[in-house]
Amino acid sequence: MRLLALIFLVPAAMAQSPALQPAALRCEHRSDPLGIDETKPRLSWQLAAANTRARGLKQSAYRIQAASTREGLRRGHADLWDTGKVESDQSVLVPYQGRPLTSGIEVWWRVRVWDQSGAASAWSRAARWSMGLLQPGDWQGKWIGWEEKGVYKNPRSPFQLLGKARWIWYPEGDP
Image (cartoon, rainbow, N blue to C red; front, side, top):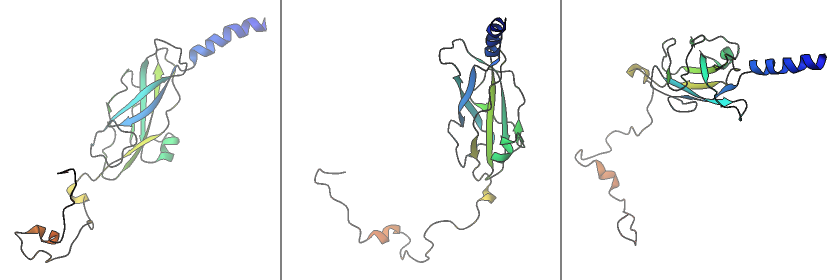
């Protein structure tokens, strides 16, 4: 009798295990990009099958969470954005629609998906992106460069400093 119960319970448990897992998270087509200037970046992920022999798998829903810290995201504190469960098979270029992003902020995000049977995957690994400087006023501080004044004696000849430079000759001809 126990064997018969086990035979019926195993397939039922297998039916509830998720067939898909989100992987290869991307923001604006890049993995963990730094300094992006898109205020509503688009997020994408690939779907990995739990069983490589499975066929006919598809995503039926997703949920994205975004947080300002990795630890906050790990605890489920999505202070920037939480889509909730969204019934959709979209996994490419999903636009960020959370709190407005500011210059220099780092965003940690993750996604979970539901398969065609309604089984939820585990959360993906955490991915991130950071924002660049978005406003002209954000560009403050000292720039890297040559600030020596009065170097050029003739303003019409900015190449004066190259007066002692010599071209490299290639025996094969013009490089």
